[in-house]
Picture 1: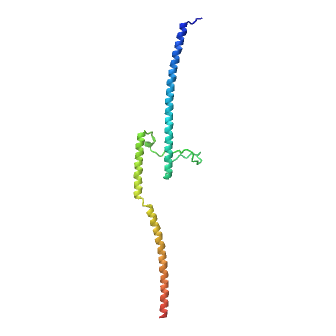
Picture 2: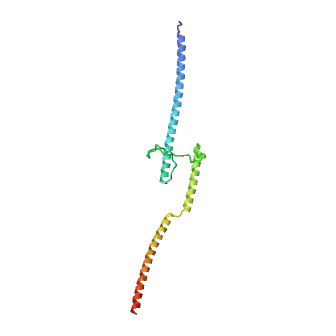
Length: 172
């Protein structure tokens, strides 16, 4: 059996301290990486919350404008409005289905807004003024009523005039 000397113990102690220092450095680097990943996760969670909020706003705007969005019909759907809306993207072309950078998405959004603006202008230009159309229909109805009353009054006037003339001829 070999006995360890003081120098042997000193060397072993130095080796252990070196190993401990390396493990501490690794622990610090892992802790830093973990903190960085935690920040990234929190950032992504914040982005998800913002995107869900934006999706909810868009959905509410579509409901206000009475636009029907294509949704996936879930057999488990009970009609509860608290469930998250699941949209059906099958009708979209490949251009819109692939992952898009934020700048490209802004360009697509601007393009969509321009198309919508063009279509809205065309609709406003070609569609008659509905209020004027309603007023025109009301005037036609009123004119018909007045014409019917006028014809009834004219008929009554003829009958009275005929009776008057018949009495007048009998007397003379």
